[in-house]
Image (cartoon, rainbow over all chains, first blue to last red; front, side, top):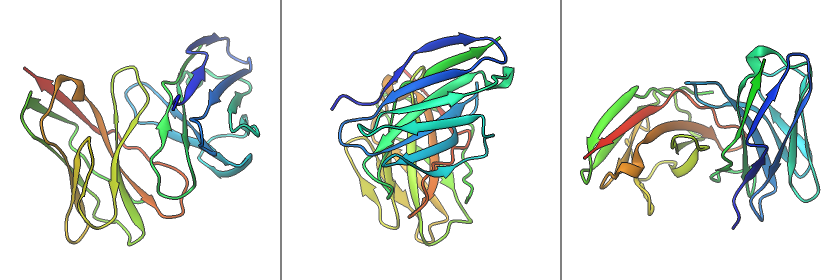
Length: 113
Length: 110
């Protein structure tokens, strides 16, 4: 098992710009979720994809969007970046939508200036 | 989503057992109890989960109260590598997301 890998590890963007974060799921996993973690807080659910379809979304505006590809890798796109978007973005994968444990990546640290 | 309540922080000595409590008085019958931990500079790591019966795995044990309104994560012998934030999470059988609180920060000292 290779685990979940995310790229890049760190990123600095300017307010108003757009950003794409990438995630490779653990081998055999067909479900991927994205979370935002502000400093000192627990992760907050953004959305989840199962077999390339979004099947759950948290309380985030439409400028947060995603994709899942046939190989189950995934992207998180954020448009019109705001300073409050500065956070650690975590990708997690699992082998189904039931009560399985999720495998998290180490995250992408996004700083918006 | 059902809420959980955990102490903000706990301390333990190395090689001693640690009992991390979690209250979830509004738990529903379909909610599973999940535990994750997050080591510094890493993403959360799955620890264990259960529904009604106590569960054991190589990392920890999960003790669930008979009325399911509380649970306890047990680390049998804490090591320095167990220092992390531990999250207790309720997840329904068909829901997709994990709802994290602020967790319990565990410090382990020599």
